[in-house]
Image 1 (cartoon, rainbow, N blue to C red):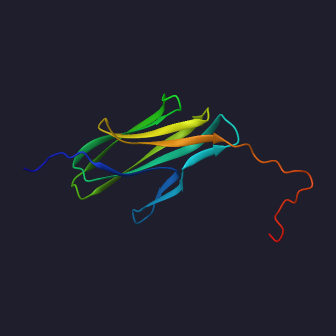
Image 2 (cartoon, rainbow, N blue to C red; image 1 turned 90 degrees about the vertical axis):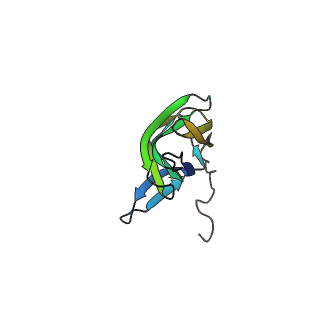
Image 3 (cartoon, helix red, strand yellow; image 1 turned 180 degrees about the horizontal axis):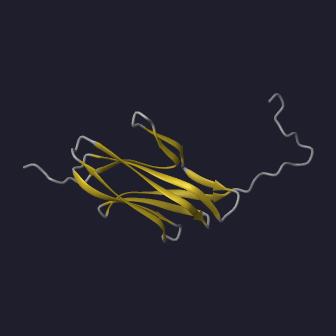
Length: 145
């Protein structure tokens, strides 16, 4: 029996600052984000990218990437269709979230689904860290720098 459709596996999902494609077809991922630290909130991120690599599937699929706030409310989502012609091939999708506003500190979540099946959910912590103020008379650089 030859299957006509196999739901793919999610090989990786990365939240990052930018994704570029080189002339040879390879992807170049910039600024992989572990957490977001800002001096104040609310703040708007000009662009955030979610890079997903799919493998071991066969057929046509719909990927949905959702960003949820600390209260679990949906902030934004993207949907893209992609296909895999052979289970030995890989497929890459890139979702772009533009003008994304973070209003409160806390744990946000990225969810990745394919054909309404949850494949991955991961946390992205947003924290406020006020800028450090320099004390009067303190040197602006470390000695010997």
